[in-house]
View 1 (cartoon, rainbow, N blue to C red):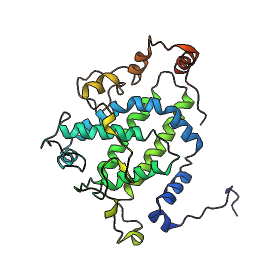
View 2 (cartoon, one colour):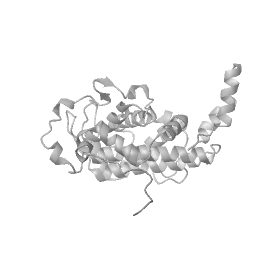
View 3 (cartoon, rainbow, N blue to C red):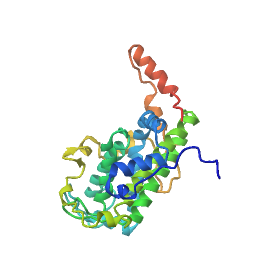
View 4 (tube, one colour):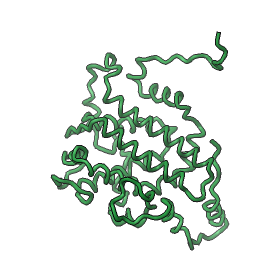
Length: 292
C-alpha cells in the first residue's frame, strides 16, 4: 500500500463544477495551490503590473490586427460601442481605440481583490460574452484566438517582471507564479463556455436574463474605461516600453533597454515631503520582498 499520500483524497462533485461558479473556482484554487502567498504577491506587485498595462494593450492589438481572421472580429459592432466602425480596422480605428480602453480597464481589474467572489464572477462573464451570450449584438470569438491572446499577455508580463532591474528574484517569481495562476483560471472560465463538458447539467439553461452592458456585473459598473486615458500618445509616453525585440512591436518602433525604464526614469528627481514620503521613496528604491 502506498504511503506517499499525505492527506485524504478530496471529493469533488462533478455536477457542481458545471452548475456552481463558486465550486469551480474553489476547485481551481485548490488544484493550483492559489492561496494567501499568491494574493500577497498580486497585491504587492499590482503597481508594477499596472505600469505595464498600456504596453501590453498596444502589443496585443498590434498582434490581433496582423491576421485577417482576428481583425475581422472588430468589424462587428459591440453592445457598448455606438461610434463609427472601419471596415478594415487598424490601430487608429475608432472601434480599436474603444476596445483598447476596455482591455486596459480589464487588465487593471485583474489587479483588484481576488479574495472577492465578484472578481471571479466578472472573469466568468468575460468568457460568456465572447461566445455571444449576454450581448444585444451577438459576437462569437473562436476559442483558438482567445487562448492565443491570453498566452501573449502572459508572455509579455512574465518577461517584463523577470526583467525588472531592482525587484529581488524571490519577489519576481512570486508575482509571475500568481499571475500565471490567475491567467489560467481566466483561461478555464473562457473554456467552460466553449466546450461541451457537463452539458448534461446545463442543457436548456436560459441565459437571457444575464444580458448586461459591457463592464457591468449584477447591474453595478465594475469596469470604467472612461477613467483610462485612451490616447495613443499617452500610451507611448506614460507607460514603460515593452521588452526589446518582442514579436508584436512594430518595426522601427522605439523601445527602451528595460520594460520598466520609463517608470524608473519618471521617479528620478521626484521629491516627496515629510517622513512618510521619505519612507515611500526608500521603499520604491528597495522593494519589500514578498515571501512565496
